[in-house]
Structures are given as structure tokens and as C-alpha cells.
Image (cartoon, rainbow over all chains, first blue to last red; front, top):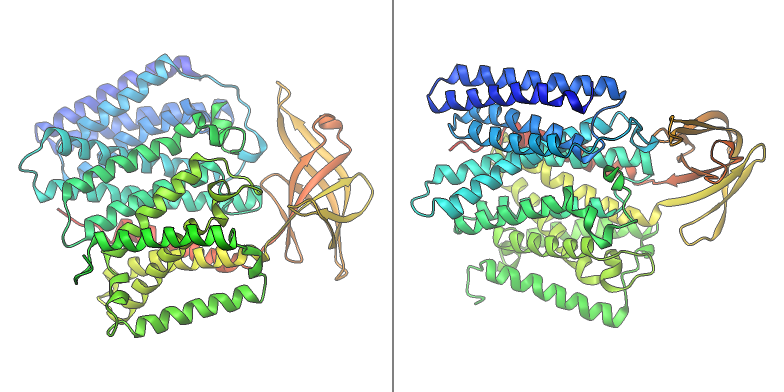
Length: 262
Length: 292
């Protein structure tokens, strides 16, 4: 199994997810849940077979983390749809997953099997997987914020702002777990749980930025639209933390997290 | 302005004042000297800090400014300043010998804003403890905030007591001298004798595994035989021994192995904070959902 087989899993998955999204608009709840789950199973089958054939978890390169991201977006969509029944969420998660799948189809960044000793740890998979799930949820929150801020300018209901809150709460919970798993792992790998490596510094920046959003939203008197702007700024910081850091002069040659440039 | 009750504007002014005060301190006394916190000073400073917070908390009914510190109007600006300063840290190159923003951890404005944030966290915890609102609301809150407080305070104070040393060993010769972060040689109560350096490679020649078989002798009389792998440190007498490096020019034929020896007596306290935050994140996910 390798990247050339990806398309045979990706196309059926996207079709199943699209069917699920369509069913959600039609109010066929169980059909939506079933189709999305089936798509997830097909996609996960590819991840597992990559894992087996690479003889390591496919989590090292940017292409491989995109794989997980396109898996977690529909999964996050499924959880949110199951819990709050937002009709639009499956359409959104399918479209965004499609974007990442297309990037991987046209620019797969195929890499060798090698996994450097520093990454051979039981912490590796949970650390990255939890983070990818957090990124998917916070991505959903950012899209919702952009929609409310730029497209639906008038008559936004309190419930719609609450959607952003819920996504951020769950996303931040996962981000916190990912960050602290990273700290516990760092102690075993590098001797210290927090070394202010550029990646860690940006992780802290992003984490604090989402705390600004949460605390601002708790204020008895505040402007919800300002909160949406904070949410978008936080998502920009998250992008710097995820991949932007690879292009930052301050992080060049000083970060131990640069292996995903592969 | 400054009419009660204070809002975000006053919150941002207080934080801005701290940054200006920090700049003045940086100019007058120079960077923050964290090494002053070596035990027992660090422990005393921490105890003093906690007692001070409790005393300040008890004065809250008399002093409005104290009540203000446990409001969102104080927390949001403090967090915002922390975001900006941490972002500056991420955008600038950090070095041990750097000054001002190039050594952010010793830069007074950064330190004061983080202390300010910690004070706010401490005071809201005390306030929540004296106005209990029920398990479902307060337990996730306390796990998150107490966890962050414990982790931040213990990690910061404990940093001065942490020792990180590099030891270069050659096959079959016991070594007890190591170099600290300032390249000063230090004699240790632990000696390491390298028995064998192990290196496995992938087909393309990149390292798959490097490890060292070692004998460890301690001044307390222990003798331990162990294998140190990357990601698998060995613990002896409060020291953790990490596989750090080898003679990369020799590769698998390397006759030396480099270890990092770490001692961090505050680690258990920091881990209590980290595990509280982990539980807090889980309980936030399960309990603290706000349904629309």
C-alpha cells in the first residue's frame, strides 16, 4: 500500500461523505450518520494499511498529517451533527476534507520509511492525533466565525455564536491534551517537559489566544463580533504553529520540530 | 476612566503599566536573575507568594482593585498581553546570551505579565473556593486553574534547581565529570562506564536506533547495568540519564557516547499540575458544554 492507491480510497470516502451531507440537509438523520461513518471506515482503512506498510505511524510528514486532518474533519462533523444536529456541518467538513485530500493527491510529499529515533515513542501517535482532531474542530470554529462575520452580518442569533463556543471548548480541550502529552513526551525524549522550542512557544501563543476568546465570551458585557475576530486571529496563530513555523527565520535550525519538512 | 466598575480599558492600562514598569526594571537592574531561586530561596519565595495571595484575597472586600483582579476585565487583557509577548518570543531568535526580546524568559515585561496572569489565576481560584457553586461547574474550573497555577509556579521556581549536564564517555573508561549549560566542568556523584555503543541503520543509512549499554556507579554505592535508548532514559538516584549523541563522523563505529544527565527535584509538583490540567481538559469536554 502506498500513495498511488490513495485515490481508490479517497474517492469512495468523499462520495459517502457527500451522500451523508446531502442526507443531513434532507433531514434523514440516520442515513447521514451511517453514510458519513461508512466513508470514515473506508478512509481509515487506507490510514491503517499505510501504517502497516510504512512500519510506523503515518504521522511524520506534512502529507501524512494532512491525511489525519482529512479523516478527523468528517469525524468531528459526525460528532457535532450527532450531538447538536447542525445540518450544515457535514457539508462543511466534507468540503474541507476534500480540499486536503486534493492537496495530498496532487502534492503527496512521498517520503521514505525512516523514522528517526526521537520519534519512536508510544507518545508519538496520541500527541499528533489529538492535536489534529483539535485543529479540525478549531478549523470548523474559524469557518463558522468567518461565515457569521462576513456573510451573515445581520440578525445573528445567540445560538449561532454558541456554536463557535462549543466548537472552541471541545477543540481547546483536545489541544490542551495534545500539548500536555507533548510535555510528558518531551520529558522522556529531551530531558525537559518544556524547553521553549519555537514550536512550543507558538503552541503556547495559540493556546493563550483561544483562552482570550473563551474568557472574553464569558464577560457579561461584550461584543460578540469582536469575539469572532479574536477567533479568526487565534486560528491564524494556529496556522503559524502548525506549518508557518517552517518558514520563520527565528525557528530555522533552532527548532527540534523541523523533521516534518522531511 | 477609573470610575467603578473597571472595564477592559482599565484592564489594558494595568497590563500596559506593568510592561512599562518591566522596561524600567530592565533598564535599571538588568535582566531577571532566575538562578537566585536556588533552594531554599525558591521554596520560600513560593510559600511567600501563596501566603501573599491569601492575604490579598482576604482584603478583597476593602479594596476594589483586588476585586477587580478576579474579573474577566482583568483576565482578558492579561491573556492578550501574554499572547503578544509570547508571539514576539516566537518571532525573534532566542539565545542564552541574548538581551531584551532575544532572551524573553529573562525580559522583565514578559516575566511581569506572566506573574500578573498567575496572580489573577490564584485569586480567581481563592474566590471560587470561597463561593462554591456546585461540583459540575467548579470542579472543571478548579482543575484547569489550579493545575495551571501549580504547573506554572513550580516550573518557574523549580527551574533554578534543575541540573542539565552533558557527559562524554568513551568505551570502558568510567566518567564522572560533565559539562553544565555554561560549559563549566562539574564532578558528579554518579559515574558512567560505556560498555558498548549500539547503532542500527535504515537502508538509506539514516539512524534507526542508537543506544548505549552502560554501567552506572553511584557514590551511595549502587551499581546498575542498563541500556539507554533515545526516548528511554534510565533513572538512578534522582538523576535521569538520556542518550544524547555520539561521534557522528564515525557513525556506527563511534567509540564515544554522549549522555545528558538531568535532575529536577520539582518535577513531581509540576506533574501534579499537568495531570490536573489533563483531567480539567477531559472534564471540560464532558461536563462544561454550553448547549445553545
